[in-house]
Image 1: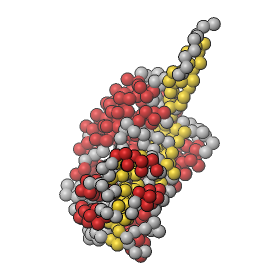
Image 2: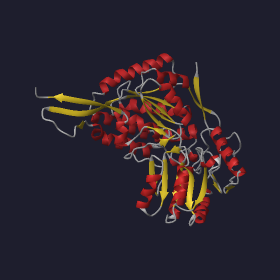
Image 3: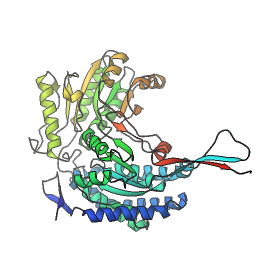
Image 4: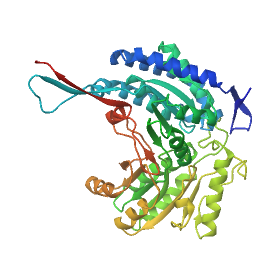
Length: 461
C-alpha cells in the first residue's frame, strides 16, 4: 500500500503516515460530491452559514491540540497559537456577506412585461489543493465561500500538513454537514493530475509554486474548468523619508521573519529613502537580533525550523551568492543545528545588495531580507516592479494620498500603507504576473466561485 510520510522538521522523525486513496475511492468521492451538491444548491444560504459557523467552533474547540500539531508538522512556534483568529475573521465575514454577494443581479434597464436578471449559481465540485505554510488560513479562503456558494468541496492538503485535512473533516462532521459535501482525500501527484483532467471537477484552487501552477493548468487543459492560482511572491516594501521609522521597523521585521519567512505575502525586499536609510537599517538589525531560534515546542522560541531542510538550503545558497557579489550580512547569528541539510536557520539581513542577486529577484520564502537605499519614488517604483511576481507591496509614509499614488504604479494585487503581511477578507486577494490569477475573499471572491446564469422571462403574452 502506497503511503505519504510526514517528516517533522522538529527532529526529522516521521510524525504521521497515511495511505494514499485508491483510484476507486477517489472516483467514489467525486460521485458522492456531485450527488450531495445537487441538494445542497437548494439549501438556503442562511442554513449553509450555520454549518460553516458550527465547523468553525468545532475547529476552535480543539485549538490546544492543533497548535502543537502545527509545530510538529511545519515548525511554527507554539507561542503564536493557531491560525484561528484569521480563520474566524475570514469565515465569519464570508458567511455574513454571502446573501448580499450571491443575490441575483437585476437588469439595470427595466422593461415592461419582462423579468430579467442574472443568478450566481454554484460551480459544482470544487477541488482545493492547499499548502503547508498557513495550512488552515489558506484552505479556508476557498473551502468556506465555495460551500456557501452552493458547491461541494474536495480537499487535497499538502503532504507536510497531512493532519490538517483530517481536522477539517472532523470539524465538518461534528457540525453535521451533509455527507459528501466536504471530503478530505490523500492523493499523490499523478492521481491529482488525473482527477484534474477527468472533466469531473468544475473549479480548482491551488496555492503553491509557479511550477505547481503551471502543472495544474497543464493537467486541466481542455476541461474548461475555472482556476484560482496563488503562486509565488517577492513582496517589496518602500520606506519613505516621512515614515515613522520605529513603526516601520517593528512591522517590517515581523513581516519578513514571522513563520520563518514562509509567508505568501511576507516581506522579502525593502527599499529605503536615503534620508532615513541609516536609521532604518540600524533599527531593523537590532530588532532582528531579538529572535530566538530553536525547538518550536519551546515557549521561548520565536523562530522555529523551516518546514523542510531543502527550503533552508535555498536560503543559504541565496545568502552565499549575495556575499560573493558584494552584499554585507549583519546578523550572522549562530544557532544550534544551523548547517547544510538542516531546516534550522537563523534570520539574516543583507545590505549593499542589488538586483543582480537572486535574493532580490527570486522568491526566497525564508528568513532572509535585503535592504536597498533609494533616492526617490522613481527609483523605488522601478525596483519594486522589477520582479516576475506581484502579490502585495507595502508603502511606509505619513501621506495617504502619496501612498495611493505610488500604489497606482506598483504591479501588485494589494497595496498596503503602514502595514504588511495581512489579508483583509473584505478586500479581494489576488495577484498579477507569475503570482497567478483568480481571486479569493470579498464579494469578488464569490464571483470567482460561481457562474452567471441569465434569466430573460416574458411575463405578458
